[in-house]
Length: 362
Image (tube, rainbow, N blue to C red):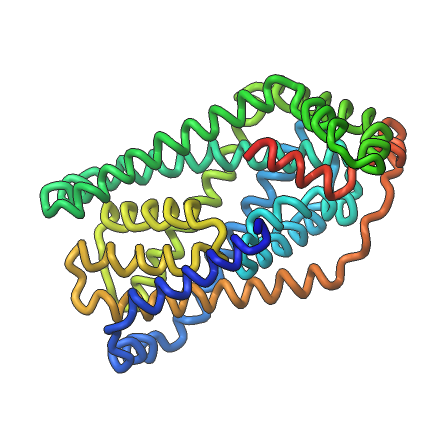
């Protein structure tokens, strides 16, 4: 049943796309695309800058934990996981599950450091996303007020933006509290030990020291404090800002010139929809419908055709970088055992452990 949910999400996404663009004018859409010319080569750049920046932020955070990782190895992990996220049903869950294993093979991290690094990245991204959402919402206040006075749909959209910010902030706070308790892995270990599968219980007992070591590393991360994590968080925030740069660039290439407030509202709304529709690859369908609806609400001429052209460019860019990610993934070697003295091979946590940890943290 669980395996069917991501595919159901993808099918629903395709149905939403079909419905959202049922009246699209192909002539107008391809007319807009034909006017881009050489500017099309600029489209992959914001994503590339975002990945480079986020990788640096992640490496900086790992450095605070005294983990020395190769930048290019970390970048390969980022691109490979992003390719899975953007193309597979339930890709976000899959990417987060295999990330510790990839960190072990590409960056020579121990299992404890790999799981801790993945969990800490998730937390810092949530914090940076809150900052990005807040900044965009403040810049978009005039546009939000215009929406609220325009129609009942506009009021609903404005209320959804505020609600989404609260949910995002509570999610970051909740994850921070879970990590700060310092017993997350211990709880997962106890849960696995109670399962009615003898082989799994025996294996879990062998992993005990690895689980406890991971808890210690997460506790070390939480003890760093805001000042030592500020640099990494700011670079994560900058990576989020490249999302808005990409949206601005795509609209500009299509000849659509929107004010900064309107762009911010459109971008944070699309970001919110993408997070909600995580079972569908890259928010397929839900996010597309959101862009089309928002452009119509803001009174953009030929909104459906503009949205269709915009999304063809955006999805094409995602497909290009996904191919890069998959090509890197196929060339990666199988995970090798860590040589760190403090974390011997018998303590390595396999991929099932990583899956359990992320299910525990939501």
